[in-house]
Length: 337
Image 1 (cartoon, rainbow, N blue to C red):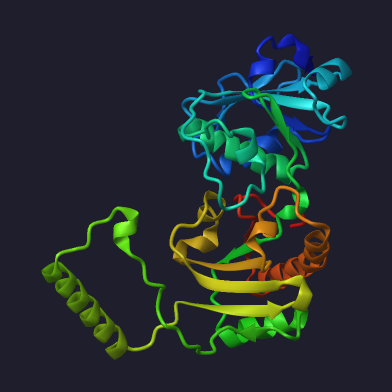
Image 2: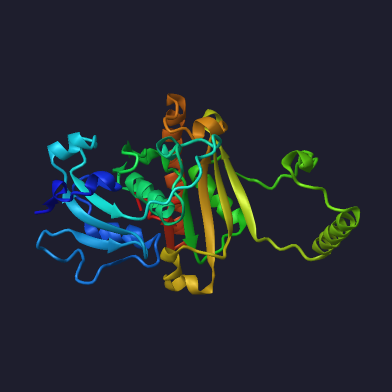
């Protein structure tokens, strides 16, 4: 029997990870190890103990996660937790805040709203980001003790998945895999005109122009690099495939050599000779809607129709490159994997 959350006098002032019944401590520890290299149970702690006492999972040198605690009706109402939240883990981390968030780029997770007075930085920022990712992955919630706000991340908002494998599929081979899922798939290699970046007056940004001699030297160096690139043999180190879903947006597949694979991939035997990443992502043409905390219904409907195609393409790629590892952008295994 878990200890009641009411037994922790500091629970109100701490960040809480609120979960449904059924998530094991070891499953939570695996998600911690996917993000924090030093994550481990404190000496004498661990998921195998059966005395019901809370365990302590160290995330970093400064932060720990203690639990599980049973959430009773009284604590749930007092802390304004979701009614389904019956288990809580208490975070002990330093309070480290910086400047208020920029009012650009959307707020899919609601963190700009919650931390309007100053965003978490350093270790607290890393822990907060992980808590939100775990809550989305496990269909849970996070209560931030300061300022006392609850965030319930939408688990359906996580559509993108990357397949990591030791096999390089040539573009035509990958296209055939994609066309089994979506016949309209096409290689994104068609040339198109480009007039260069929009002109920017650096003086408006407070940046002094470089002296003429430095600018000439920089351009000469760039011209030399361009000439060497043109004269060198073609080397394909990546490619893309697009799936146009009409009113439902676009699915893209990007294939490239991964030079810094996540920890869940590094330990695989097949990764010793190089890792190839196949990133499958869904794109919506309105960034404001795509990054809204509460996106409009038409986006959610389109996303719901695109998600099964993403899943089918990821499965097909994993089969074609097996053995492979499929991970979400958070570094967690795909829920359906």
